Length: 90
Image 1: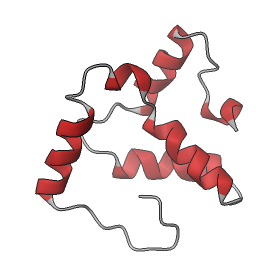
Image 2 (image 1 turned 90 degrees about the horizontal axis):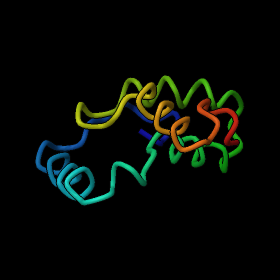
Image 3 (image 1 turned 180 degrees about the vertical axis):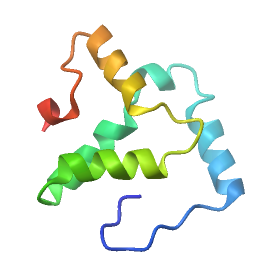
C-alpha cells in the first residue's frame, strides 16, 4: 500500500488475519489509531507531490474490510476536536 510505483500486491490471507487480530482485537486500538493519517504522514515524509489525494485513493483501494473507512476516521477526528480533513494534518 505504501510503495509508490510498485504493483498493487495483497498480503497473504494468514498475514492479514494476524494483522487484524493484532490491531482491531487489541483493546483501545481503534480509538488510538488512524491508518489513513499514518499513511499520509509516510507519503508526506517522502515529499511526494499531490500526496493528499493519492493517499486517499490508495487507502480506499487497499484498505481491508475490517479497517475503518475515511468517513469513519474523519468523524472520529471531529469527535476528538481535531480537524476532520486529512490535509489539515500535513
